[in-house]
Image 1: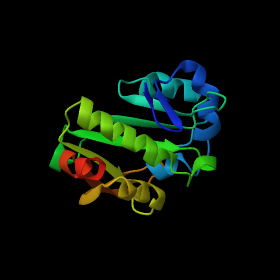
Image 2: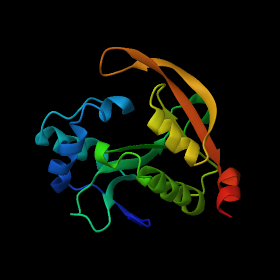
Image 3: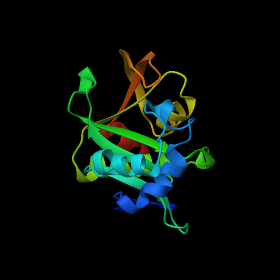
Amino acid sequence: MMETERLLLRPWQESDAEALYRWASDPEVGPAAGWSPHTSVENSRDIIRTVLAKEGTFAVVPKGGNGGPIGAIGVFPTEIPEGRGEPELGYWIARPYWGQGLIPEAVEAMLRRQFREMGAERVWCAHFPGNERSRRVQEKCGFRHICDTPPSPWPDGTERPGVCQAITRQEWEVRHG
């Protein structure tokens, strides 16, 4: 578990399924990140078991709220050829919480963990063209453009390229002392 000024980043629990479904069924949320909206509470419970329960993936929970998650953040080995195997962050947050700086706060906590505790030298993050909110999060957190990926299949049947960005330990330390 990690704590920031306004958030708790904690492991997902099956009891989070209703809250997850509430936010992940929104057609404005998942598709921007490349996944289909959740179709039921049971679908969300299955996603918790098979995807969100993995090591390094956290529920984003506001402090002082009802305790339910409003988003997710996780780290996994990147498949980006220029950094294959290095850590990559992925995240999303429910629409009512957009524009409040919560995901940049969570990203900074994950970067601190990757650089100070896990010994990473570089951390990746990607977004799809047109996902300006995600691009702004990455920009705010000091990521810089490294490369673009070839188009890959999307849930809606289209193909889209990825915009790959990274920040090095040194770049992060200059920003955070």
